Length: 132
Ligand code: HEM
Ligand code: HEM
Image (cartoon, rainbow, N blue to C red; front, side, top):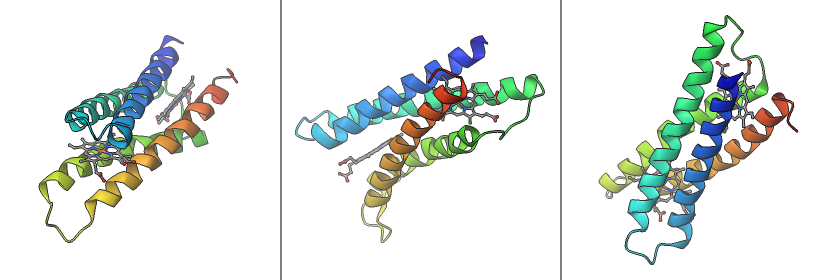
């Protein structure tokens, strides 16, 4: 049972850090430290999310239960994928300023998609666990 608590706690922590990071890019651009805050908060948030997924996946494997047995699991792995790809594109957009590929809008879009997917999956997780 405690694994469920650890999983949900890491997901909530990840979500809050990511929200703070995105808030910084959206509303604090006048401050010279906005990017530092954005990077730090989002990297910690993404790591917390990835570790939370890895722990739950390992626990499910360890107990011999079935993976992908709920829409929460599918959306959850999608969130994991976005948590890796979004910060990577964040770094790439700073390095490839002259690239023909428009990394900036892609990064923004994926970041927003990540937040929406996390909100849905937290609600699904709470429902799955019988809390709401
Ligand atoms: C953005 C937030 C979340 C993500 C990305 C996420 C992701 C995942 C993933 C990928 C799995 C499936 C692992 C597998 O099949 O190998 C899983 C399972 C699970 N999650 Fe979450 N989760 C999130 C939030 C929550 C929350 C808030 C709760 C409950 C309070 C929760 C409860 C559960 C439970 C009970 C399972 C186990 C399902 C089973 O026994 O098969 N999750 N989660
Ligand atoms: C999970 C990780 C991340 C998420 C969810 C995320 C999300 C976002 C979002 C939603 C925006 C647009 C904000 C707005 O104006 O509405 C943004 C902007 C930005 N992000 Fe990230 N980000 C992440 C990680 C990173 C990293 C690691 C870097 C760089 C090393 C980075 C660099 C930037 C930059 C430079 C902008 C400003 C671009 C612009 O004004 O269009 N991001 N980010």
